[in-house]
Image (cartoon, rainbow, N blue to C red):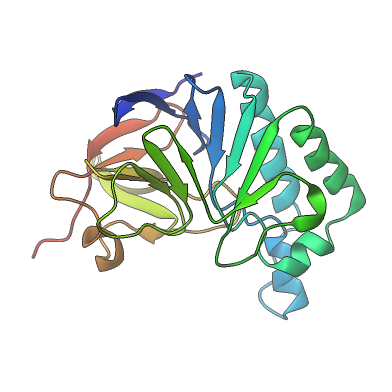
Length: 223
């Protein structure tokens, strides 16, 4: 795997090119904001039509990460489904695919703001999950430390050889780690926006996704 290895509160973590977080010391894989069923919800509500392959693509990526890491525990860090109906109406072939990924693993669904957790799929449902020095929750809380969260779908814009590129990214400072959105069709929030630049500390870094993740100072807008 072309992952990027970093230390966070005394633990060695890996940022995977997919946007998942791998904690080898716990054999734990964490992914945030899968938003399964997004294209179905958009069609149901009369929004823009999207190709109906996002759930399959996201589950395929998750399956590849599980196979590559051999994870025994999985944390889905909130907004796993685009809404509760997307969980309830999931087609049987995709539900079977997800249940196959869950089989034999401890699976934790963290409460998100889009869905209260797919209660008919098994697993453990928690508002937050504390493991050692780390606390996993969906939305970052100011003033906390050792926090791993998602919600914001961070992305960063950088210039390379005269071109401007926008990539999904992890955000990291001395208090918290924010994961990118894992799901297909999820979009993102520029990390220079106040919602993120005001939340992250002065020395924050971004880990840009790509075939090989790259770590660099978090881009900020000039004040």
